[in-house]
Image (cartoon, rainbow, N blue to C red):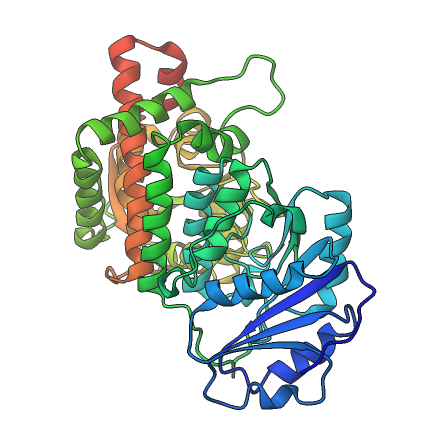
Length: 469
């Protein structure tokens, strides 16, 4: 197909593999914003190319299926043959709306040296749960390797500054199909080019074709790529600090910043490294063992429920499991006292505790037996506020949370002097790839906490001790 002369300063690159049901619509809508639309048909065995007949697009046809990385790279090379300032990439399956291109470009014009990503994770309710949590976990590791927070590292809806590709080399083998978009963020950061996010709707049609993304295979490849990057840079602790610790744990408006979290994190990673991963492995085995073996007898007269970040001001799936467990217990023992912990987190307008209380009252739990704490923002703060703001520590408690979280929550509760019985929200533990990734993250946080606690006791660091006991 011949392409038309274009007047816009950007090209649109669309990789496509067996997208006959959506490609015509996506390309037609894209042509409204740029006359330079480049489609790479990656060896499709359906009518993908035929659906483009009559449309003024640049069509690159691969004889064989080479993978998304090779397609993107071919499209980027083709775009750079024209005098463009930006290269827009989006998927052909309908998950990305071309109508959002102007929003991303407006951001690009104000941040001319950044990659602009259409971030979907703010719209949690529209994203399949497994995909959402897998993306969140990937964000953590890629942000660490890049050295700054990243909202949606797996979104393919992006605006790249053309200058990024002047001296950039990228692996584009088929095994790198879904590694490319993660690795380019890391390599760009090493050139001083970061990314910024623009919130876009998450579009997951019920009749959409199965994703070409293979969770186990492709996340494994991404993990290997990130691991190589981190190991080659001595685990890049500065990146972990800048991407996770600094924005989330340290005071934002305080001239005297607390760097103890950063210090204990470095010690934790150092211990894992010197032990060749043995300490991390033992933490993982413990977290897994508690997750699998825990039950919920709820013998104590006081029930403590750990809150969780809300979704659209309402409990998410995990939090609902915790609240459902409370409801079951109260149906059998209506004289127990319930403590719900959790303040305002994320973009929510109400506290986690208030939302939980509202849910239980709606399900006929008497409001007189529900007490809430609305200041804490994480598990450590949950326990701190529970100890200082109530008399609950004087008696045993039944501590309710999800199975993956029980090990760390139980140890922290014990550190504050609570006689806590672990009570699992779920009836049983469900094994799976995403569940394992969550346990690995929990094991890392547990290892970090135990390192900090041991360090504080050995050095008699009063500041850390005041936070953990």
